[in-house]
Image (cartoon, rainbow, N blue to C red):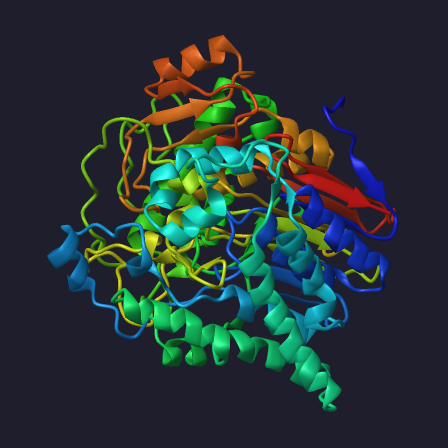
Amino acid sequence: MATERPEIQGSRFAVSSGHYYASQAAFEILQAGGNAIDAGVAGGLALGVLQSDLVSVAGVAPIILWDAERAQMCTISGLGGWPEAADIGYFQRAHGGAIPVGPMRTVVPSAPAAWIAALDRFGTMSFGDVAHYAVRFARDGFPMNALLRQTIVDNLKNYAAFPYAAGIYLANDGEPPAIGELFYQKDLGASLQFMIDQESAALAKGADRRQGLQSARDAFYKGDLARTITDYYASVGGWLTMQDLANLQVGFEPPVATGFGDWQVFGCGPWCQGPALLQKLNLLKRFDLKSFGLNSVDYIHAHVEATKLAMSDRDAYFGDPRFVDVPIERLLSDEYAEAQAARIDMRHAFAEMPPPGDAAGAPWRGAPIPSPSGGEPHPGGALDTSYLCVVDAKGNVFSATPSDGSYNGAVVPGTGMNISPRGVQSWTDPAHPSSIAPGKRPRLTPNPAIAVRGNGKAFLPLGTPGGDVQTQAMAQTFANVAVFGMGPQAAVEQPRFASYSFPSSFEPHDYHPGLLRIEGKIAAATGADLGARGHRVERWPDRTWLAGSICMILDDRETGMKSAGADPRRVAYALGW
């Protein structure tokens, strides 16, 4: 199939990420002898600089990886909980139940711990080996691109509200830097260099690699950076403390999984929306998608109705499993999928989000569904996040979806970092399974995945930014490979669609019953037929960044060829050798 960009192929290794310079950093690590985990961490840290509007070095970083030596699939949560002083009642008393932009939506930052944990257990290099690319991009600058500038333009009020953030992202005239102008983040570079320096000092004193990594981690969670961060929160009445930072631990957890034809698809647990992707695939495999035809009215209708059912369950049941009893085995069972699939009427769309399935053996315990929202869907979720994946010559596979952009909170003076504002994905209604509580993690939208064909014949890491569009874009692009036999580049370039007929994961959790957006290249007659079935169809322009930015690599273990795709909707690029 002809593609807009060439499909990148290599026999040794491949990388695909949300920014071309991050892909370059990861590629150079692989050329230097690092493995996929070393390269993935280098690329992930670089994304926190290159796309700091969408990703924070001090944000979230959920990871799923295949460790070839141990023949093990593992997830790293990369998500922190609310500080111990968090008070759900504060938002009701002070903000009418809203979670405002700024420091009060901060949860304990987990990305540094997640990257370092991945290096410690599965990597081969030091923190300094992989982090120096991010330092260079921050210190020496990189050219402003259209997506970064547009994010700043769309959030001028948020940036202008915090003078230190404005000093980084806005020029003296209050406007963003021009496209092509070098963009610097000196304090962010200095923060990362401090972590490197602390590691180097420990290694110079005889520490081994693991002890050196611990010194880099301590620089952020216990040292001068931690003090600078928590002093700021104390000065603005925030909740984050030195003890919160020191107590953070990221989890190594087995993935959740489901079958789809001759594929097994693996994702992170219900502390994120990853299981919703698996639930949707469980429903879709009960339809003959290939006979429907790609992006036909039946094909799109089946996807959208499956999305509504999966998102209804997400709203009713998903939350931090340390606080909420999530019936995950039932939700991913074939018996449950059969019952749910029977609810899909191929001639009529659900006009609203349908009630959740009976997965708990008891009445639904969730919060009431909000009233329909007027106007445009809130853009915050579509802006957030980036993604990268790496495969190496030894068979390791790395897939990560870092997030927490600078527009969504307050950048801490002197650090260059927005400290994880992921509290924006919690609820102030205590009846909701993802309500605010001390130590409790919000329900995260970023959800990296890895699919495996034929018990190891091929590996397919994939993911995307896009908030609530993520699982929808991932399911469509995965089906392009698994059902229609496309290569990765052709798969990511196909037109997409997305439903908004469920409460958004992002504050203010707006809800747009029946709303379905389709990209420009989907046939006009298809849009009309979808409208006749009850969908409230709106047109996106073709290649909109709102439809996500999928990156994926097909690592064919039978041929030895690694084929990588990167989405032209944003600044994603792939490299291979």
